[in-house]
Image (tube, rainbow, N blue to C red; front, side, top):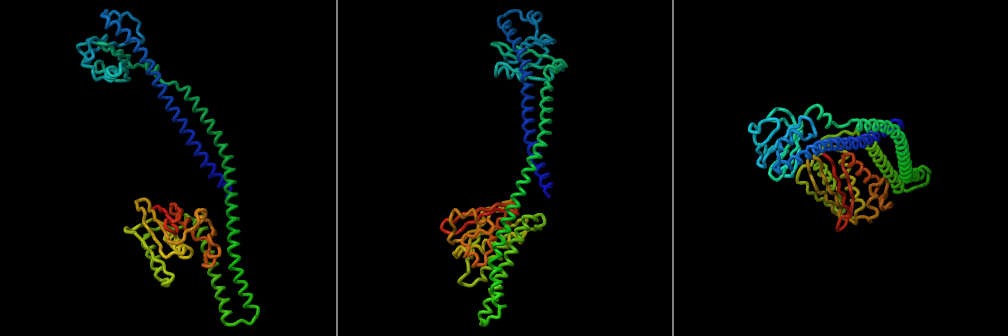
Amino acid sequence: MGSAIRGAYHKKLFLMLLAFSWGIIISFMTFQYFREKHYKYDFVSDQLQMYNRNLLTVVEDGLPYEDYIRTWKQPFEQLRVSIITLSGAVIYDNTLPSDSLDNHRYRPEIDDALRKGSGYHIGRQSISDGREYFYSATKGERVIVRSAIPYSASLSDLLKVDWTYFGAIIIISLAMTILAYFATGNLAHKAAMLEQEEKNRLKRQLTNNINHELKTPVASIQVCLETLLSGISLSEEKRQEFIERCYINCNRLRKLLDDISLITRMEDGSRLIEKESVTINSIIGEIAEELNLMSEEERYCLHTNFADDVIINGNVSLIGSIFRNLTENAIAYSGGKNIFILLVENTSTHCTIRFEDDGCGVEEHQLQRLFERFYRVDKGRSRKFGGTGLGLAIVKHAVLFHGGSISVSNRPGGGLRFEFMLKK
């Protein structure tokens, strides 16, 4: 069992760390990849932009730019040079007759140059000669100079990302992953040990609490039975009183064992608990009928606002235990006369329900302890009414079993307010 817990912890911890670390590594490598790509694009474009600006100076000074293009050292081989008006008409191209070229106004690099002063575009196929180019355009006062390099193997090599750096990062990351596997194994072992210790502590605490709760009814039954068996002369009324006391305490023991069994089943065997379609309105209707059976003096008035049917996939017994334990808690301890069950929210995924009474409520510092096992606000009053101290703990476990959550607060105007959500 211990090795299984350690294995589960190790796997979960390692996978979480692996996902987190590799997420960061991949994000960093992706960022670095595109950063280097853009750096190389900008480097090539800067070389072309420098050539373009020099040519612009020649063109706008009215000098013979064709001689400049033929004789001036070019930054790259097979450089194609075009001179384009601000309206997009090509007035010169060193590879094709300018009158054979269409208007270039809406070429991406020309559009960028007109808007921002310069621009480049990568890998677009030329309509004129069918080749792919790296284009870079620069805007002057009267014209735009565009230079372009054929997208050849040499240019592709120039723009290619150097994978040596990324390979080193991957190798280092794999080595760190292997180290992390062994490190998480050690951490998982410690975490499993701590969890097991905590479970053992809780089990000891629960055993002590159960032992404490069993002592009172068992002692009472023992005293009554010893008295009856001692041969002491007792009146018929006294004998009947002792028998009734034994019966009451036996019922209390049975209820305590049933409650402990229910909590244990929810904790340890939740996968074995069957679920079906449950209509909460029907359960509340049963609660209303049970309240009507109470005597006139003890009867509580139930107020509901369930306009729609609320149907969830759950266990009818556990859902019933939520409403019955809350109702019994209100009747036994609130001191009020009204119970309110309100539908706060009803969606396709969950429902939220509010359960209130109009009693005295409890002190603020006690609110968060109400769901603890065997916790009682008034121990004497609780035992007087036959409470096991597990009712609200069962409510919380049943709500959690149905994927929900529960909170408790004092109701404005008096009483307790329980608000819980159940997933459908």
